[in-house]
Image (tube, rainbow, N blue to C red; front, side):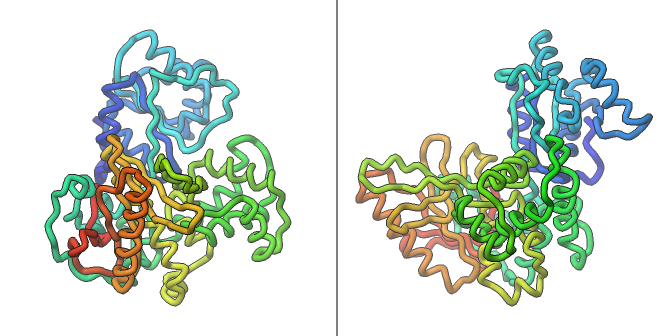
Length: 425
């Protein structure tokens, strides 16, 4: 295997191993710099880089002439940034069909290419995995004494988890989960996210489809998304927000176009609404909650600093929620579960819903301060009562994910309290 020195294990590896046994090829998709290539290398015996500039980008040129040229190598064979030559997809699919083997190729991609030039979806031949930046547990900033999976199975012990400082939580959000930033000095955390957005605006959006866009309007939309991080907000509301806060006039079609490109670059990762399958007349709202793929991108889009966030805890509360939901999704996906949120027409909301593959589900509220735990627990119990009254399957667990708590414990009313810095999959 080509596992790089210094590689930190990722939770997605379990699913990658499973997919390599299930499919002839696996495509790992996600934002740039999130660690796709290193994770692919950890399971590969050979590699070809489409972005390698040697000999005037020889690999890319060969692939454009004949995609089969880049398929040769010991398996699993990694093809990095395959989307730079889209016909590679069909070549891989054809080779898998021909050989009928499993785990032959690993593709990594940081953008979704135009469908032009791709003849076949790859269904049944190429499995897709979505990868994001690192969780606090993967980085080492969560001690991992509370397992999400074991929480659902009832395996839990009250535990002192240690003091958590507000300045540390702010730093975690500013840094984000970029693998290359783990070991750099704290005083330069955040630079990766700032430069990331500049590259998105100046280069990446054009490279996806060759369309030149108004950079001022792109930045205005990024600012608005950051102001509305961790909220349910429509495109129409984004449009009004941009006009009011940035003084830019932008029409609905342009917003939809920009959001589509952001999604194709994997910089957004919205949180869908939970379908409770209620038999009552209660109307459950279906809009997704807005998220950047990493909370540090929201910080960068706001132009915020550690000091600014320390002095504006209202704004930081939304960013802390984004951090928690970013990590909850990683933990949930690693145990074959999914992350949602809940909101209905009567104003009842739950920050996070995790649904297991058997339909069992849990409700989670996210609170920065320990002084907010009591109210959050009351809201969760009220929500459970609504589910029971409506005749729907109630949540199997209720949990408050907290920032500034020094213990993980089960309250007398049955609600769990877990610091985000103590959680793992």
